[in-house]
Image (cartoon, rainbow, N blue to C red):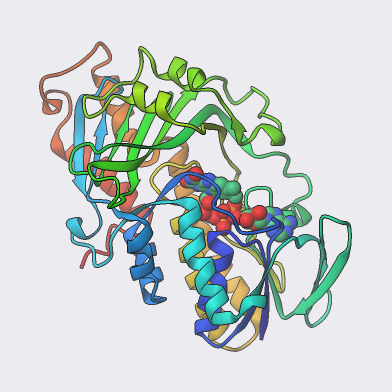
Length: 412
Ligand SMILES: Cc1cc2nc3c(=O)[nH]c(=O)nc-3n(C[C@H](O)[C@H](O)[C@H](O)COP(=O)(O)OP(=O)(O)OC[C@H]3O[C@@H](n4cnc5c(N)ncnc54)[C@H](O)[C@@H]3O)c2cc1C
């Protein structure tokens, strides 16, 4: 069997590695000229890291990422709501990692090249069309100079992200992604460590939020961490037109992010305003997802990762669910038998599981706990959060989401 994978992001590359482990040939076609270190920080949950550990990638991840020890939810003013141990500190067999998206992609990419060979990832190959009418699939790719090339295989997987060509082939009327009116200013800078140097802070609710976590340490910079920050602000509503594609990762001046944070967001652990001012490159993105689909798999063609279930980046599920998709799909293809049936079974298992997370993220995912408390105490701070909500109420919101995301039951 030969599997063609359109898209060399975290989802597509992980799938290639997993297929190779199971003796199935895989070829990745990536539209970018090279696999560069794009993006900023992401978090990956323990059940997804367990899959990467099974691929032997834990030592490489430990070299470039940080094991997340604790997650603290706070009000926008910085009052503590609930704190949770994470990863192995919470009893899971595998860690949670805070990591630069590009470094995670690089670790998986390097392993693909080493194990599948240098030809396994072809860059400057944008999937433009495909034909899956017969007993196989033929896909056509276009390079930037306009030249086209074809590849044939038994299965085609669309791991081509939120603007997926394959998804729009099956759903030509789906329109642009759905935007909730929130913009996210993101950046990372070397900065004095806060708390234990491995903790993550989420402060504020869906309308105005700060996310802060370290993603790397460097022995040459003791006492500092590469600190990832996100300032989210609701600047429109569901009726506001989504920013144009070319503005999806536009560079922004620090003043824009500062204006959104000042008077709304602050935490005692570090000076977020100075951190924002110290950040050299700040990017702004719309918070988008898409409605669920009636089907991902159409004969020998299917979707995975953000192409299948783009979701708001709350709850650390974007990359994590793409990795879990890859595991499920690789197992089903490796079981032998009809690939069409394997793709249908993958669809039946993973589509409802991820649709529930997309839906939960629309109302804040685990971060709903912050809105919940702020609704109970709209006028300001409190001496003790338990004056406002019971411990059970707080833990139920966060714990229910973990179960939904598939790692509530994975404790060692
Ligand atoms: C540039 C970039 C930066 C990101 N930064 C962050 C971040 O900072 N924080 C965060 O939480 N999430 C970020 N994300 C999203 C996060 O990576 C995904 O949610 C998650 O990793 C799931 O990944 P995926 O592989 O399904 O999709 P993606 O990561 O979107 O990867 C899709 C890949 O497919 C390629 N592609 C698209 N169309 C075609 C085509 N027609 N033919 C061939 N290849 C194609 C794209 O170039 C891309 O490499 C980013 C995504 C991208 C693409």
